[in-house]
Length: 174
Image (tube, rainbow, N blue to C red; front, side, top):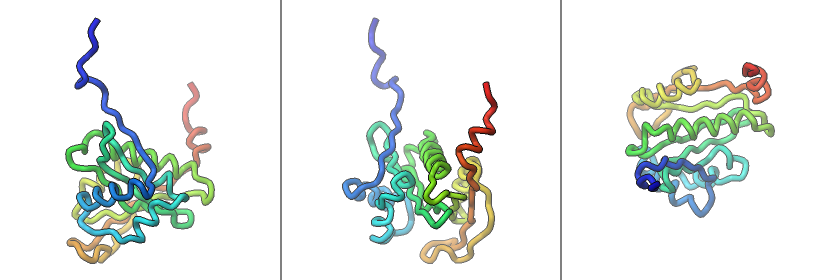
């Protein structure tokens, strides 16, 4: 019996919390993924211990290919950035990252997270559809949200969270 060729082995997706050690990787990914430059404060905020479950690097076969970064705002979780390098899209990496953050937010207790919200540039219909497939709904448009890129307006999308207990109660018993 022979071993299958290495190319047929399943791909491995892993996640890692953000630290001072991998912050350079996040900065490099963001410079490729997003049309704006983020401040030093942004990068300090995403390595804070209270957002560890909400700010993650995405690895595909041990290669960093994307990230997701959120911040707590009272009882809301604001999804600041999420991106995956183009060659790795359509591999469910963004979906897996978003599901991890949604699950972490639903189980977070101090404070209890009530909703996740984000902004999407109005020209980015693919991103809007992606979030809608994950239970987000458009709740408005923020005019002039973007200062240095066009178009300047952004959709505001949100997903109201239910507690894990309520989600468990609604699952049918088998």
